[in-house]
Length: 381
Ligand SMILES: Cc1cc2nc3c(=O)[nH]c(=O)nc-3n(C[C@H](O)[C@H](O)[C@H](O)COP(=O)(O)OP(=O)(O)OC[C@H]3O[C@@H](n4cnc5c(N)ncnc54)[C@H](O)[C@@H]3O)c2cc1C
Image 1 (cartoon, rainbow, N blue to C red):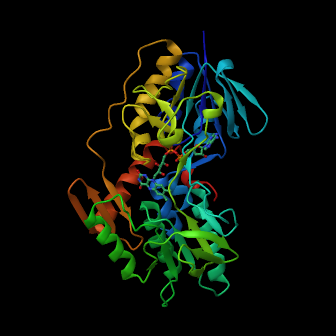
Image 2 (cartoon, rainbow, N blue to C red):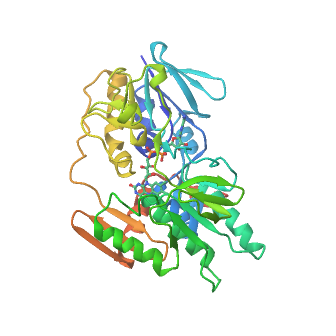
């Protein structure tokens, strides 16, 4: 008898399932996708979206169309809570949706731990569509003859890429040095090899981007950021790029969570299956992989695609599950500097140049091409 698969979130790890819904339908199963938006934006191209290197259509998947084309039900909402004993999820729109098997790919959000970060001129780096709203806001300021002052809060890969790409956006067509600053906390890219860090510092300095090294933002007031040493920095647009927390926190609902203080996401075993609810699965930033904690980077949800696709079908059919083993050997990281250059890092190899950015663009576009449905590039903004 056919069963019901509930997909919570249409993120990077669910794309193979969404592209292969016909197999689930052929096997007599019904699939429902709950997503807060019709589109899912590919984070790897997000900074390029900010600078205008990519159009919105080039870097998003129409997950609603993917679901409906494959015969699934699409519900535009968010899952807020879950009652695992009753196999039911509760949505923001008031609906309760039952399931036989449920899979979470709900990603992560920057924590709102900087006072004042809820202000309209502060843009958390996720969801990625925020970068599009920030771009429009900056373009409005430029259109009125101004030059926006940009402050990036956080010095990880997202913070570095956003500073460079914001500079590119507002630097276009103006001769003055764009007013872009970064408050990176302990420093830029502290988890990265020294050579990568040096290149990143030089890349920002080359374009006159200020770095308040060693300083964090204590609070944000009306157009002013107060740094940890008391310095007041005026801004028009601030980006919140201070790391991410998996969403949603399901600990209250009896789902085992991993990581420090249970904040690493849904604790899953080697089969990407919840350790205490065998009909709940997950992939991407919202999980904590029990065999080995994985970095919160898009590479892992991308690699988890075929495993989740196999295991969700296997769980519905009572067949053997497949283990996720693609966790060793590291991954290729290429940072988009925003000026046409990329910084590439893999193991001992570090390189900065246009070829690195060319390679990143090729890899990202190839990923988009695999899952975009027809007509996507013609859609309105
Ligand atoms: C600016 C930036 C650049 C980055 N660049 C790279 C890069 O180049 N390479 C790389 O490997 N990583 C990169 N990352 C990291 C990367 O963004 C994440 O690791 C990746 O997005 C995780 O994918 P995901 O599918 O788990 O989550 P997400 O991409 O966050 O997707 C989750 C989806 O679930 C939906 N959702 C959320 N909550 C709910 C809910 N309650 N109910 C239903 N749906 C929900 C969201 O709308 C979203 O569509 C970057 C991050 C940022 C911020």
